[in-house]
Image (cartoon, one colour):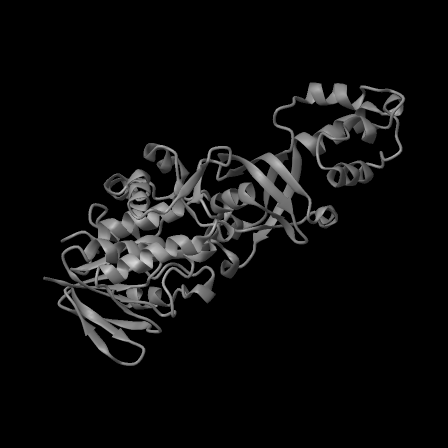
Length: 403
């Protein structure tokens, strides 16, 4: 029986431990006093476990290095994960009208964490809480164990690194493992915040703080490549946030290093400019604002009409030039993205251990024998919607499989 050491008890580490424990002695090292601390925060605390789309569709939702995940996704699919939850009597629900996201039926992430915690105990996984790994023990390009912050050496036959990225450091993922891995030759791709709110240049956005918009289409260009995503969003005191914005952030985070990026928002994707023009002028005796009332949130429409000095303007007095401006604000609002919030506020880290140095079929390092990786510590990230958690579970399962 081999001894497997796993560093980090997030979703990737938990799945790696449960898989490895089927035929190995497993030690799971966690710097917090509980497992799944970051898992508790996903889906706004509801735990967006995975997505119900066909596994083939997952690849289009992965922003960086989707081909690398082929073996992981097909070895342990989203359906395999849901079967596992079924076997453990954990009820879940599929929100078909919300991008096929899968949540616990209770809307409590604690339910998932409890299942994992109980199964770790039942699988005889030894969990070392409040313990941080400070170094690796490597001899002749083969890993032999780890060194903890108390100076203890824990020896093993296989080590799996599942320490996460650098986002939400309060959960334990502070990025400190990257310097250790770099010391032993692994390339660490630059780290960027992903799934993160955006800071906007235009001042009027602050007046819209708290206004939520449904099913918005956001478009932009990154290095001549067109990006188009849609979903809900919300205006904030610094800019914009919400599911659609978080998705877009993962595609533009690197490009923002080179300067501002313009994005275009369509708040009424199901209505053409021509249809909107007819509504604006529908009742000539009414004000423009009254004619478009109900199309979008009232506070949003009032602010836009006020910006254009059209608050009291009747439809009969509306100039074509002003009508075009109003339609433009609704159908193709141009906003300038200055930056993202800091990586500490990101849901996910983009960047990490280069996948070129990892065997995609096993998750083993190509540089150091018996060293494996899983989850966010690697240079893989995806859109919001349960895809990043599935990456963690799938790569964790693969890394924890017998070698």
